[in-house]
Image (cartoon, rainbow, N blue to C red; front, side, top):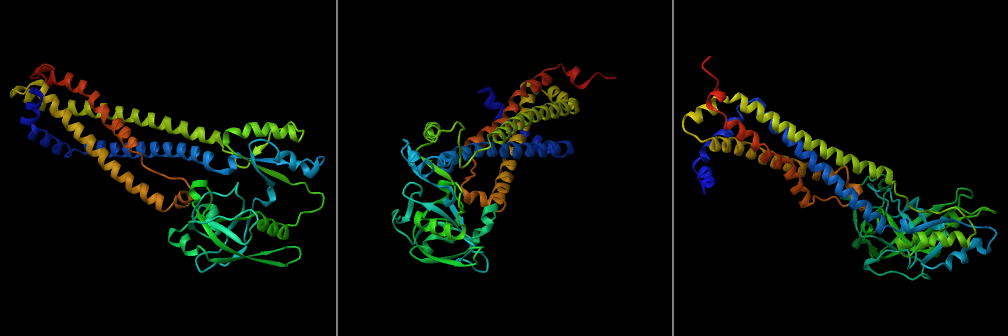
Length: 411
C-alpha cells in the first residue's frame, strides 16, 4: 500500500524527471546506445534461432542428406546395381548423371526471365508431395511437376529473385512447356514438350523455384543425348535411403555389397564447422551485449547521481524520504529503458522486413523461413530491462546517505 501511494502521489515528479533527463546530451547518448544494443541483441538472437531451425529443417526435409553417392564397381554385374538395390532401407538406386539437368532454352523465356529451369529425376520414391494437381507413374513420359511459386530464371542459383516475376503455379497447371537441348559434339538439337500435371511446395523439400520433376525415362533420354557417356566410363550411383536415421546402416551395407572399405558421402554435406562457429559467435556477442548494457547502466547512474547530489539533498531537506527519492530515479531509468527497447524493437522489425524483401528474398523462397519468435522479443527485453532492477541497489545506497554527505559541507 505504501509503495502504491508513493507511485500515485509522485507520478508528476516521475514524468517531470523523465522529460528533464533529455535536456542533457549524455542522456541522449545513453538512450541511443540502449537502442543500438536492443537492435543488436534482437538481430543476433533472431539469426541464431533461424539458423538452428534452417539446419534442422534442411537436413530433415532435403532428400540429398539421405542420398549416398556410391561409385560403381566394374568387377560386379551392372557395376553393383543389383547388390545396392537389394539392401534394406534403400528406396531408389540410379546413376548420378541422371539426377538433374538444366535446360538451355525453354518456352518460359520472356523479357524478364531467361527461361532456365532445372529438370530432376522423378519417381515415386524421389518426388515430393503434390499439393495441387496429380503425380505421374514411373512408366509415364511427357509430364512434369513444378513448384507452386515458379521462377524459371538462372539467377535463382545465386539466390537472386524478383518476387514480382514469380509465376503462380496455378497459371501453368495443365499447360505445356517446351525445352531445347544441344549436343555440343554433333550440334544437333533435342526438343521436348512437357505438360505440368502437378505442383509442389519447393520450400518443403529445399529445392529452387525453377526445378521441375520429370520421369526417369525422360531425363535419361535428355542426358544421354546432351552428354553421351564415353566408353569405359563408370558412373556413380545415387542411393536414396528411406530415413535419415538409416543412412549409416545403408552406408555399411553398401561397403560390404561392393567390397570396399571407404565410407560414402551423401549428396549434400553440411559444413557443421562453420555452423558451429556462427552459433558460438552469436552466444559470445549476446554475452558482450549484456556486459555493455550492465556497464553502461552503472556508469550512467554513477555520473547522474554524482551530478545531482545537491538536487537529491534538496529533496531530502524538503522532507522526501530516501525511498521516495530512490523510486523517482529508479522509475526514470526504467521508463528510459522501456522506451529505448520499444524504439529499438520497431526499428529492428522495419529493418528485418526490408532485408527479407530485398537481400534475402532468394533464400526465403528456397526454404529458409525467417521469423521473429515472441520468446526472442521477451528474452531481449529481459536483457535490456532486467539490469535496471539490479541498479536499484546503487540508487538506494546513494539516497540513504546522510544529507551532509550528499550535498557536501559549507566549504
